[in-house]
Amino acid sequence: MIEAFIEKDVIRQVKLIEYLYELEKLTLREVAKRLQVTTNTVKRDFDKVVLMLEEQIEFSEITSTTISIIFNSSFTRYELIKLIYQDSYFLKTCAYYLLGESDYLTLVEAEFISVAKAFTIKKQVENYFKAAEIMDENGAFINNEIRYRLVLISVWMRCDVLDKLIVSDKYKTATVFVNQVLFKFANGYEKNKREYQFLLLNTYLSLSRFKDFSLMYEKEAITYLKNTPTFQQLMDVNDLILTKDKLPETEIQYLASIYKSIPLNTRNYLIVEMNYQRERELMIEKNFMVRQLLKNFEDEFSADLFNHVLFEKPFMNFVYSLWQETQAFSVEKHFYLSDQQLQLAERIKQVLESWQKHFHLETEVTFNQTTLEKFCSQVTVSLMQKRTPKFVFFFIAEDELSHTIYRENLKRWLNLDYNVIDSTMYYSLDELPIYVKDWPSIVICERSLKYDFTIPDSLTFFPISRNSILEDTKNILSYVYNWKTE
Image 1 (cartoon, rainbow, N blue to C red):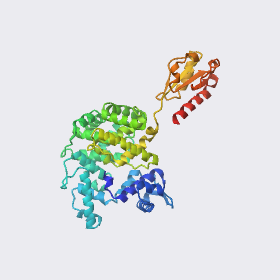
Image 2: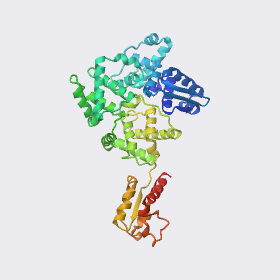
Image 3: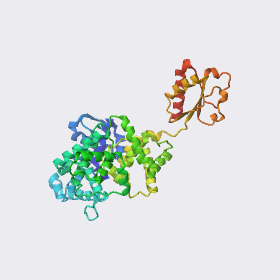
């Protein structure tokens, strides 16, 4: 939401940095198309970035057709874009307003800009606050503490002017609280600079505001958040760290929603899988509306997505970010999508909007384009992998031991989520059931048993022997995976 109000050149320069941070080299014409500007505008933005980030850049080059930047690896993406955001008068005015300095002359004196420009920016800031639903039409702040904090964080994550809010002892307590939470969640998480700052600032706001401002939730949100493992872990840290002036449950619920909206990078994949299973039980299995949305994605893309971690994990993160429109206030990375992904993003948006209308959520749920594109980048593979019928494998072998050898060897290489091995052990081709022709099936027969039988053209047939088992298995797998990707 806030990006629609920040100066357009600032947003373009932020996107350029994020694109080049990942890809290092881009075609001018393609970038101009993505940013919906001319190539000359891209060149000017590029020159501005190079000038502002001179100390953070190892190499830069601009030609008639391309732009290139290699950043110093000691700087994170978030640190780089924050330097660009410091150039935004809009963000600074938001910050002054939130500090209680709403007189536009403050900006004139602090930033040496004209009175007319400062007045115009102030009006834009008020329009943003109204769009974010923290200010009424008369310019007075509305009593909506959750939304107010999200707006404040969206500005603070980009602009250091709000550091004036910091009270040293509470900030230190917030730091200890966050570090303990990250340690408790899973033997220590790697700290991503942006995510860590997001957690820290939100925790600081809870500590500094809970006595004077109350948080209001819908009953369903309270029930859901209190049932999450995250809530209980935060309560444990609350008891451990805050021996005095403990945070009330409403604040722990707020922090639970914040922690669940970002990825926390554990070192152990088993923890990822365990968390995924617990979260999907609460988020998907016990929530009809979310299950319906997942089914809508399956229907639109003809893909198997239920119980598919590659899709469901980013899907759940996306749904979490819809709570209180959190995604509209976070500092998300801008992804450089391919043409195919851009088309995919539009289809994803259509699925979301159809679901939104079906459940009459137009006023409660909005979709942020940057977050939507991030989601698209995460699920492209899952959505492009079309639903295919499962192969059924039938084995014919001389004896029980041969059956065991051939079956177990193939099972080592097959994904049994997408394939089925018939449990019946056949000892002759004559024993094959008649329905074998009606399914996508593969008949694997020991060579010594196939000579007295004419193989119908309708059967997909592979011979196998112990002395050539590796080569025979390779031929079978090559057919299976080539068929599924055609």
